[in-house]
Every structure is written in C-alpha cells, then in structure tokens.
Image 1 (tube, rainbow, N blue to C red):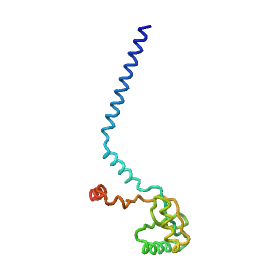
Image 2: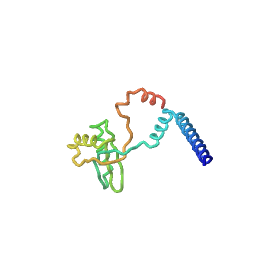
Image 3: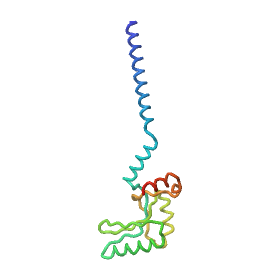
Length: 152
C-alpha cells in the first residue's frame, strides 16, 4: 500500500511540474508579441475592410429616364450647401438613390436630418455600411501625424 501511495505522489508531483513549465513557456511566448505588432495588424485589417455598420440619410430615390440627371443635380445642390458632408449615389435596379453622411450612431444622423428636413422633406435615416473616418479628436495626435507622413 505504501508503494502505491509513493507512486501516486511521484506521479502527481511530476504532472504539476510539467503543467507549470507549459504555463511558463506560454507566458514567455506571449510577452514576445508587442503592442506595436498588434497595432500594425489592426491597421492592416482596417485598410482592407474600410467600412463599418453605421447610418446614412437617404434624400432621393427615383427611377425613369431622367433619374440619373435628377440625382446628379440634387448631389450638386446638396454639395454646395453642405461641403463637409459626403453624398453617395447608388443604383439598384430600377432606382437611383442618394444617401449622405457617414454617421456611426443613429442620433448623429437624426440631428443632421433635422437640419436638412426643410430642403428634403422626404429624407429619412437608414442603416448602411459607412466609410471609416478619422475622428476630429484624433487628427491632432502625434501618431496620426506620423502615419500621414509615412504614407507619402
């Protein structure tokens, strides 16, 4: 009986040291991964997938022979009044659509909708994929300025 107990103690002791060694080697490997390399991977991913779920405001939907001309006129008119807001034209048979803005949250889109409601009474907020934009808060940071200079 003593021999069985000694063998069991020896076996459990050996297993504990093996587990401890594997845990130590795991943490040693994870320390090699630096924050910079993770940020680089994040930037590469974002450059490949430059759109996210968000909201836009649809201000026009039309079909027919003159729909494209009407859409282009509306975009020109809108761009003159609101230079800082992007306008996008899309075609899904048989309709031309004009959607504006790149809003991350619905509340921002609703606030801008209040501003343009008089000019475009049939406008409404729609969920859409939007372009990634650089937030104004981060445009003056050192890392943003270094990234912009490294691109050229």
